[in-house]
Image 1 (tube, helix red, strand yellow):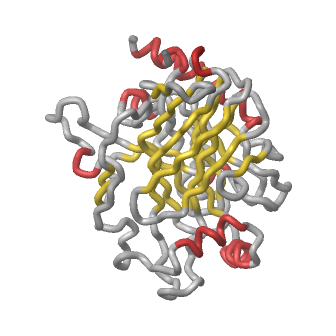
Image 2 (cartoon, one colour):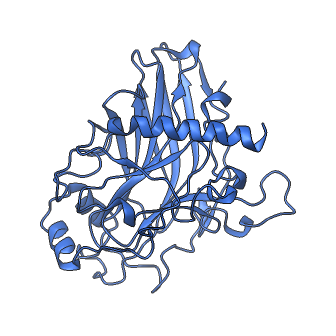
Length: 338
């Protein structure tokens, strides 16, 4: 595929996502402050956002996304969260038992897990979107600015309701967290110049990346789809009390799966692990849906330095009786899905 043709496909997918925005399944939110979080409790379904999220396209130069041009008073945001209006934020803060950063200023642990070590994410098989192809980022081809980037058919969106302000959310290509030492590995064969996708803000925000519309393979209609993604939440808690519940870990990651991309319901799982790579996995019944959409989302209802990274999406379909399954090899543009 030539670069020109590639970007015709990419922009077609972006426009599809833009048209799909009213059906992106944020929870309902009021005109001034959100009265409910981005998604319900883990493994729950939720309906369309009110107001609907908006598509983020660049370049965003007036106003610029960074630094934030309009800020929320810190006391307002912190007090609002502490009052318990966002269950997921309180769950996220409680999940690590009040642990502080591994070392002051170190938001990513240096320990090794089964998924990675420090900033490095280990490679795994059956990935259909690894966010690695630099030529598939809009900014690399001069289509956007570095704070409003998107990857192939995965398009950014955000809530904009006065409290959550879409203009303060950054969507960027991340070349260090995820790739680790391979961020510019030009001599490697097959896995050089790696990257991940990043959502970040210093202000309250709710936003994410929406996949292209992904058709269900013919032999798997009426079956199930299993989607997974690796994520890392920057651990910004420097001021909490070790072992207490008064930290500032109020941001979280989530993944939504929509059976029927044009529908008004998605099914979510939330991620609260911070400071190291972790994985979100969700299996959803397809019913009579002929396609799906995947939503990778981050949210912070407080004034925090929130940085959330996503990488290595996997999508597997299984048939109705569970006798066979297949992993997608490419979920970046609809025309490449076989």
